[in-house]
Structures are given as structure tokens and as C-alpha cells.
Amino acid sequence: MKRIENKVGFFVACIALVYVVVSIGYSSNAAWFEMPLEAVNGIAFSFGYFFRLHAVWAYVCSGVFFYYFVCGEFFGSEKY
Image (cartoon, rainbow, N blue to C red; front, side):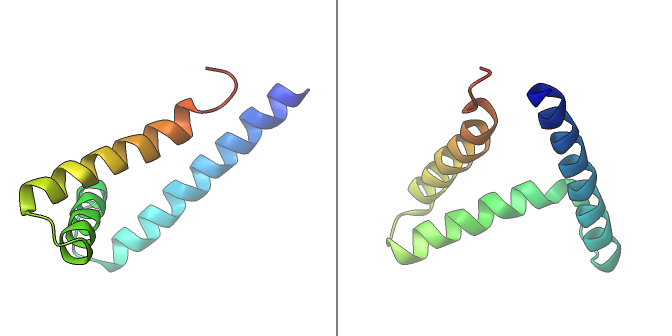
């Protein structure tokens, strides 16, 4: 029963996430598929500004951070 509850919770969370992205997308002029790129750019700006990194190193660090955050949350569960 635990696996079914996890799948239902994951499905409901995905539906809620799509709803939030669509509702935000209707009020802005940016396309919804550009949002992950904006997240990486924001993280790169934060690394570059706060840690005084060169632009290339800021993007490398933001890519590594984004990759490990997204993939670590997805693949970090006990199933994989």
C-alpha cells in the first residue's frame, strides 16, 4: 500500500506543479519552458556576485548545483 500512496502523492504533486507553472505562465510574457534556464541564470548570478567568481566558473558551479539538486532529489530516493 505504501507504493500506491507514494505514486498517488507524486501524481498529485506533479499536477499541482503543472497548475502553478501554467498559472504563473499566463501572467508573464516568458514561456514556461524557459523557467529552468532562468533558474540556472539566477543561480549563476548568485555565485558570481556573492563569491566573486568569473562568469564561466559561476555557470559551471550553477550547472553542477542545479544538476545535483534536481537529479539528487529524483534519484536520491530508496527505490533507485
